[in-house]
Amino acid sequence: MAAFHAVDAKQVSEVVTWAAAEEQPLEIVGGGSKRGVGRPLQVEHVLEVSALSGIGEYEPAELVLTAAAATPLTEIEAALDANHQMFACEPADWRTLLGTESRTPTLGGALSCNLAGPRRIRAGAARDHFLGFQSVNGRGEIYKAGGKVVKNVTGYDLCKLIAGAYGTLGVLTEVTIRVTPKPETARTILLLGLDDETAVRAMAEGLNSPHEVSGAAHLPPTVARRSQVSAIARAGDAVTALRIEGPEPSTAYRGQALIEMIRSYGATECLDGSDTERLWREVRDAVLVAEPRQSHVWRISVTPSRGPAIAADIAARASAECYYDWGGGLIWVAVAGSPDAGASAVRTAIATHGGGHGTLLRAAESVRAAVPVFEPLPGSLAALCARVKESFDPRRVLNPGRMYAGV
Image (cartoon, rainbow, N blue to C red; front, top):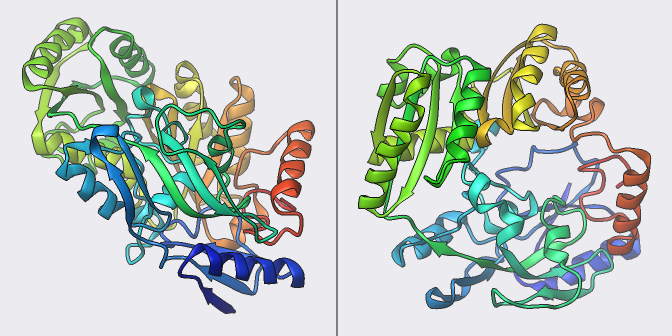
């Protein structure tokens, strides 16, 4: 396998132009922390873009940051933290889950995968903070889209298209994001011992309250016991968590008001400071289902009220355990001992209970080559995706087949 190393957009363009002319597909690699997500690529050439790194422009007063696409997220977070700001979508770090601890999560990778952590229910996903970019398409052409201000109108919102395309439509070289003020404090209200259906109702009540809940997750007993937060691990039972953020007087008042509102569901506890940060990092990064390593891990997006039924259906068809984020709208499922990685159980459960989207996030290459990794598309949508791919990458040289065969 040959590797090309590009240090700027011009070199990226030269490599892609050659690949298109020679019809030689490329695997695009930045930090490489999510390289194992998606279908395995059958390519002979790798385009390494990790050298495209560094913050170009950062205007804290304007809440806008521009950086080279392969800038490590740790560098972005450090710069923002120094100005009491944050990348509000709270992108996940899946290195522990995927076994890529030696690799580096990047800003471009977070945007390409459209990542979002627990705060998605209030702040949105990465695409909602993606203002503009420079990219190289499959013809080797360098182009720009969007802008470097929060309010701009520039025609088609290509940021929404590129986010979540997993590098199949272009090689990002520079990106601009919107940032937000960082909350002064955070605390988490815990409800103990709820079953899944009751927990989803409690989370919905909290999210629909005026108390501005920014995270809502439910950990069944077996998952909760893996937490490194002592108050959760020692509870020995299911834990439902609701996060509140803001100035200290506000979080104290809203936290107490939320406790009073949900007290009828059962016993409550409160986490402050470092325990709150640790818990939501565990939820965000899916480390609670990282072990055993041989399990297949699914990330399923559903209507929250249908989540418990889907999880129960999967558990009835396969050896599985799960936990919930996004108020029940995101289910992390670990399946053990299934020849198809639990695909038939997951897809059947989703179809039976009203639909949703299931992504096989962790499995061996041989499994990911045989099983649809992303939710299968209906014919009309598959045809639309193929036409979009044709427009951006007519020679199919950019991460071909990473999401769907032939795209």
